[in-house]
Length: 196
Image (cartoon, rainbow, N blue to C red; front, side):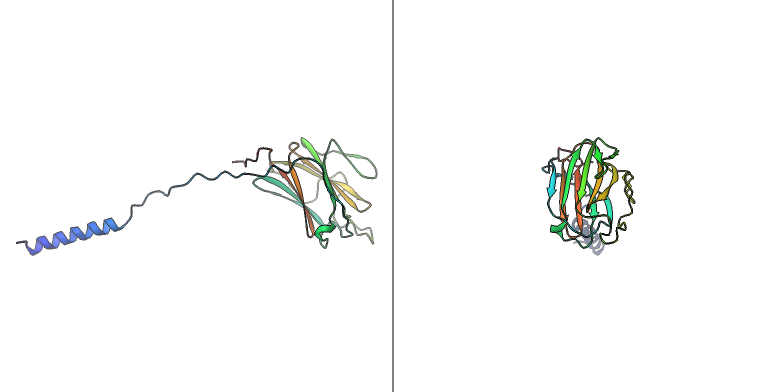
């Protein structure tokens, strides 16, 4: 016959075993290898254009860094998507409309960005974007960008605004028309692999 003391000790040990079995072992969480980001590369580097025009004015140009590309946005508030015409193409040298003056742009390749919107008020001629020909775009700092190297204002002539975008090399790019803005993305490479 079992003594009450033995029964009690057995019950305590049995209870401790059950509690231990019920609590899962804590291990370091398993981390699955991160899926490699596949970046788009089918944009190509050929000229891209859209025929349209707006009397709305360029108000700002800004840039941003993304995992697969660097982005430039030309803000034209009030312009509908279909009214934002453009011509974006690689050029050997950037020449200012009207004067033909060479605007130096740093980088391994130069994208000429033309937006069919003035950087001034068509009625008064007053500037709506505070840039100066040949100078770096106001408020644009390209420090730390993988693809962009330089961004210059060439001028605004006869309703078109002309910019020079210096990039690391001749890389694939795309242009998107959105309400109130034109977006230019330049890929970091041709392979479609994101940087680590």
